[in-house]
Image (cartoon, rainbow, N blue to C red; front, side, top):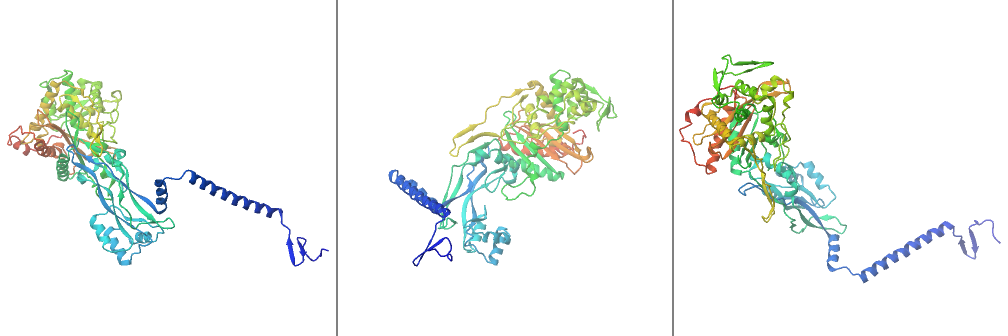
Length: 604
């Protein structure tokens, strides 16, 4: 008999109470049984696979190694950047980096202050590193050997020195804007380092470190660094010695003029090779931080400016080429120094009553240039600069990126004032590279050769990986026309606006320029901001180098190119040509008097 005092789910059987099983409980029990059977099945299957297909000894070693070791990736082993004499301009070196095991690293207050004094790391940052729960952290990367030794001498537990690849630039700030810089992980930021980052990078080094029983990394008793495949080497047409000479003389010239900035470019007029490219102010890529990103600019590549009088030789050349004038054709001027045309006027500060074609260029007469341009016409004037790619696509130079695109409007949009401005180098813009390439045309006898900075790329063992394809030159002017223009430019350095460029050792040829700068604040040409320039070649009449010098915003008056850029040109020529084993072709006393005269013509 069932007592009504017991719950319906319990049945008394002697001294035992029996609980009825619910359907839900049965399902849970069945699920557990299935999971147990499945686990046994997987274990048996794994045992069968191991028995029938046993792993190799190597694979077992790899499996075991992964359980107690790991790899820390360090910086890339980048290739070297060489100059044309195979002298390194950027190379990889091993520099000490400091790492810590935060589980052990617990510096005292005096030790933290010492680390701050040695490394510049703030005590707050040091505390953050010490509070980490991991077994590895960088304390400072790419330190000097002296810094690493001083830190290790503190005997702080958990601090280790690791040698990893870093970048070193032997020429420092002399080549900074051209060569560029890498970041802390050895990847290119700008310049050639960025442009050829893929080729230079190579493989990263790795550091083997052990793990503890929980799999956490322990930086202790680590093995040696395992290097990876090094990057490719990049070879330049740049010459490190010439680069240094140009840097020193341009620095001196900018300081003398109290100028804002400047740049200078040197090339081989026959091959288009760039031998030097200096931009100031510069930066030192060996320093970890940059004070001013503006200083990383390669101004001869990135900056546009109105060229001014340095393009006048091409107007004369075109007029001679088309037989519109001859060297000795006379032209007559008003002694007022003003020439009126429909819509405006052109002025010469030092007017002459009569000048022939050669003298128009020698004395840099704006009125005379307009005379010649009027005889050429708008379309022919435009063709002069179009042939030099002014106003076309951005110049393509192997090894140089971010080249600014020059500007020149179509001739059918020119009003009379714009036409006059273009005739003497205003109303359009160019880059320094384009000026260098243009003067190569005159120096080489009329041939335009594409510029280049890269000559070849090689492997770490020196094998040729890629060579610069040979680009054919284009003839723009007859040799006899260029010979006449070169002679006129030589006379510029003797009796014209470029007397300060005359060397005592070498005959030179070139043209001064003093161009106004457009002021965006007043939306007009600035009354006092100028670019002083000189472009030319040496020695005349058999040039070995072409050189352009630009001094931006000289504060010391007068602002002329003949005053500030021409002397820099002369000093560079006097140092570079002997280095290139070019014998002097002028007696040392030949230019003494000329150099003592100041170039005072306004139209420089």
